[in-house]
Image 1 (spheres, rainbow, N blue to C red):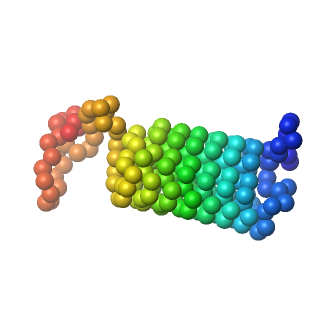
Image 2: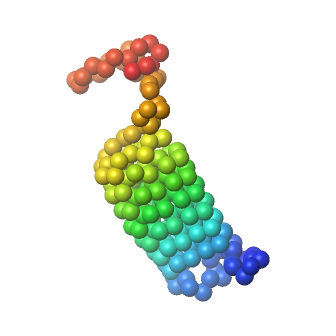
Image 3: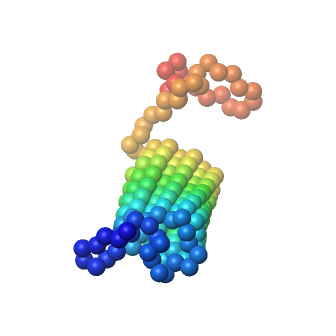
Length: 178
């Protein structure tokens, strides 16, 4: 099924696009969604330019205009929000939820970013977790929560009164405040 007012196709499935070679079971909705897809299975792109440059990939999900736009090869990525995981060319198993989340990532795997511009400073890196934090360009295996100057305290339930062997003591009050 194709819809279009100005001659530009908006596709409800990839079977009507002649530039796909061995791609099947893919779904795209939006102008130029999965535009360059040639081989891959079970990719879903919803939004203008979503997964635009994806040529080879499996099980990617992009929802939002320009989400996962520059990825050419990758699998198991999830990008939800305008421009989420916009810059990556090769990578897999990344999850970005929020506009511009993991925006600058060019290569990396197994990153998780939640929030507006979460992980947006990361350029190359893997195994990072960002919640409301832009992170840093070369993070590797980091967990960053919050934004300096904005988030001024931390409360984590379930820590107070718990025993742990080894390590360094951390002061936690009965309300869970570090």
